[in-house]
Length: 73
Image 1 (cartoon, one colour):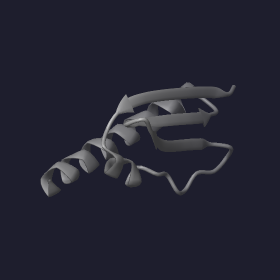
Image 2: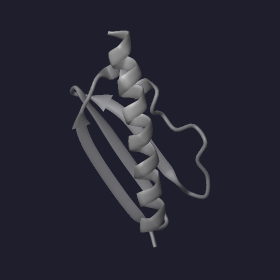
Image 3: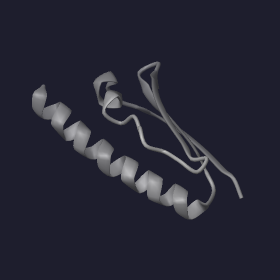
């Protein structure tokens, strides 16, 4: 099974720099980019369980990065 998932939401450009994933394997693709004041998240994985784990990790990291970013403001 192959699962493709895309999401787009408003965020600060500085936040995206800390969310790039650098250690993927087994055909897994997690791509984050910043365009038009939004984060674009694209994921390709082999199962819905894997997708759930990736999204959970992504948003835990996103929340932490956003908190640090807001402290620096």
